[in-house]
Length: 223
Image (tube, rainbow, N blue to C red):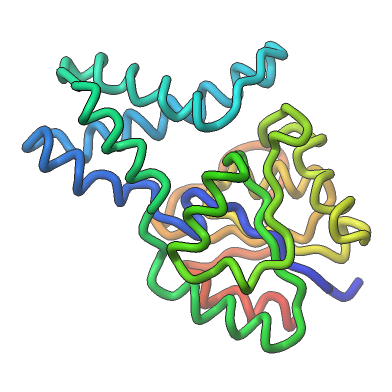
């Protein structure tokens, strides 16, 4: 089936979640990268645990809880001001450099574009507006609507409902292999942006397409 729309994961795909490491490094010299990595790892773990346990809290709370855990795990004293600053930085994550041009090109071709993310609507709107991407996206979809994080099928179903098309006519793009695989299970045409040359997650299926950056996506869509 012809692909008529593209949905993008936001965190790690459109935006570099580790751009917060710069501020973290200024606060904790020599520990910024470690704090950013621990923060991201625990953030994802909390989304999975909360969904499995039926104890949903929105992504803003999860992100704050994960930051508190990460700082504690590294023995870092996080002040209220520092915590607020790091969370504010999460609203203005740096986009990957090629993304805006790719989105503009796809939109010019008539492709319907959107993001399907764990983030809250407020988090997504802030990040997209700051990156100059908001006007390019028809749909900004948050899992808040269903109270389930990806890879739950209810989260991915937001995309088919919003676009009004079957999953086989929609591409889902993520730099998180587990997310691309979850979307594959759901039935989307999937593309994995493997920026770090990571190995494929062993979960029985593979994304339909893979590239090193988002610049590899148009060729996949044109197949």
